[in-house]
Structure formats: C-alpha cells, structure tokens
Amino acid sequence: MLELLKRGLYLGIGAVSVTREKAEQLVQELVKKGEISTEEAKGLADQLVKRGEEERKNLRETVRQELDQLRKDFRFVSREEFEQLERRVQNIEEKLKE
Image (cartoon, rainbow, N blue to C red; front, side):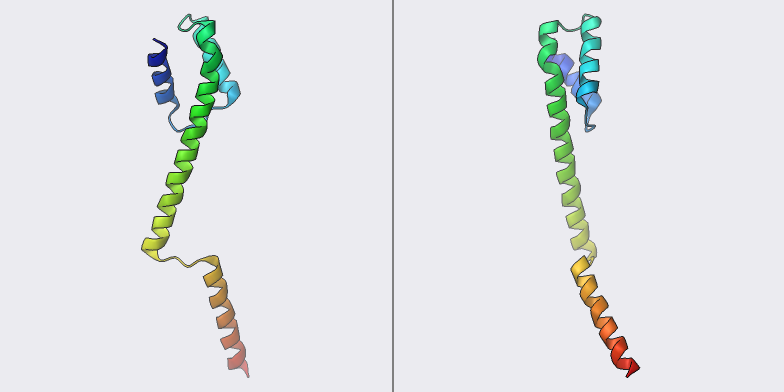
C-alpha cells in the first residue's frame, strides 16, 4: 500500500521540486485521512524532498545537454569569441579613421 501511495505522490509531484514544508503538509494530510500510519509518515517527507532534488538535478542536466547541442547545431559564438571579434572591429575602425 505504501509503495503504491509513494508512486502516486511521485507522479503527482513530477519534476517539481518539493519544499520540506510542503512535503510535511502532504504527509500529515495523509496521516489525518488514515491513508498512512505515523510510522510510514516519518520517512516519507524526506523521501519526497530527496526525490524532488533528484528530479531537479536530472532536469538541470537535461537542459544543459540540450543547450550544448543547440550551440553546436546553430554554431553560436561564445562570449570570448564575440569579444575577440568586437576588438578586431574596433581595431579596423581605428585604422580606417587614420
């Protein structure tokens, strides 16, 4: 029963990070409704917070990988490359003024 309930909560939470306060509120509501025991509730909030942190970490990594791939696909210049080009243009402009 507890395992099924955990899965349901994890699905409901998804990739959203859960604060400790919110996790504790959810667990206390489940205890009040009699859906889980006080014993089961003890570690459930910690598990929810840990799962939220893991999901956030995974999401951050996925976004970073996608951004890296976009940079490669569209050949964006880095800030350093942009600044180098900017300096070159300034040098050329100064030479043209002479």
